[in-house]
Length: 329
Image (cartoon, rainbow, N blue to C red):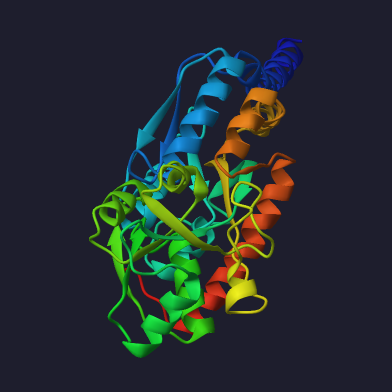
């Protein structure tokens, strides 16, 4: 009798423990977030990634009822920030804001502690943007063809600013252009588009490749001159600026995008909550207006769709980086 009672007690205790374990993630997700969230950015303040991360951090914070703190950890093509989040607790309180250069990072830096597809849980795509080729107002180059002519006439003489140390879509766009247009220009790496723009405005470099969200204010004030955009179609925010494909390289297209990731083991319920809130934030007219003013087309969609984009871009960029023989600076 005692043995039977003991077995029944053990069965009940085991079932209770298993039930509690199964319910724990659900209960955790229901109380999330209970403290401030950190959104890590791999670039210096003032650049396109930082600007958009702060915009989304503010909108997310209001939706979640908690402060979202933007933590800038620039350097090594955003791999310092990415490596940090890769080893962070998977509890939804440390997130990563990425740009479209993220999928190419493991090909440029082969000894990283993360995999772009396996190490992170995609939360949501924030938006997409063209890349604009700009020169200082005092530059002798009045159009994009003049830049290419000068580069062909004096190979390696012209230089351009590369925000993010070379592992960004803006930098890769320049590399793809050099390859497709058969020109030689020297890359000057910086920790982010903010420092790169500062150097460009000071006349320390000849030209730059950047996202309108950071370059546009300087274009509008006349401090920078926009020569071309890298998307297949002209940008709605810079409709008078022709595409690279129109001017020099038919079929040329490079599009920048932005998104949010979490460590891979983050509970699905938390990832789903974050995805819903990002989509809700992107649907707000004020957020849409701000994004479009920065030259960014609002994103959104499912976490799975964002993950598919990252996987496809990892293959595409990896193949291009190996074909071009690129290495991290």
